[in-house]
Amino acid sequence: MRINPTTSGPAVSTLEEKNRGRIAQIIGPVLDVVFPPGRMPNIYNALVVKG
Image 1 (spheres, rainbow, N blue to C red):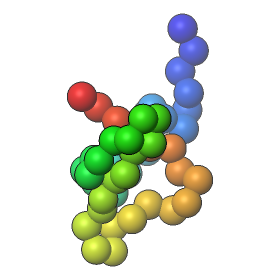
Image 2: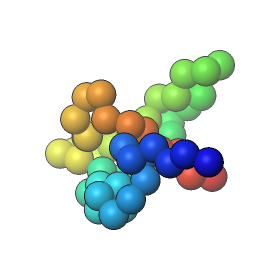
Image 3: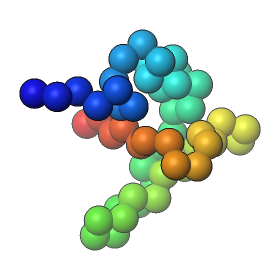
């Protein structure tokens, strides 16, 4: 099994604490994710969803 370095590792756990959001709604394959003010991650960053 290959591990994607952009979605796993120590840097990801740091980003998880910094940019933690919540799923607002799901419509088909589209997720609307809400982040606290000033905590939105940079565009094109991977979104990791844990259930």
